Length: 225
Image 1 (cartoon, one colour):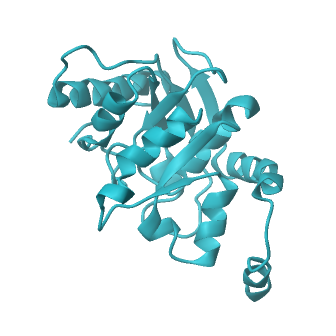
Image 2 (image 1 turned 180 degrees about the vertical axis):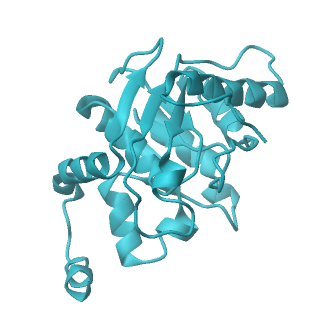
């Protein structure tokens, strides 16, 4: 570990490590990608929004994308967690993460504007609207960030994604993964409707993720909190 941390003092070309990150993520999760009424497009700016149950979530979704789409896609990650050590910063940089503030937010450090700016520059984003990981796999209420981002970048496609089993492969509080097969299901893109209220939009977005559970093996009735 000390040797690895020592190398972090020197410039690293994280792009060289990304193929290895994709291979390791796929080996750990065994994730299979399914596209339902949607197809991967490198020429579209999108927000891939998904349920959140594990630190493996962003890596698994990112690794499930085709290479040309993945190159343009950045997972959104909390700066207070992923930016706190050299190792965590190096890890999120390998996945081309976009670090945003969750605490002490100022007008100059507004996470919504930071995400919108990345999208205006041509990047798609990976976002978890629950804001925190679920311990039991039940999908929690979506926070307002997705609504505000959709308002800022109204032409961007919003793609729901359901992640199966990742909360069981690497549960919250665990360090070592449990060998299970997971699924990544991409759904039909949606847009904010004219005049749509925040509550209605967030409920519709959450339901679009839950509807994708029907396309995963061995999944029962969708759960929600």
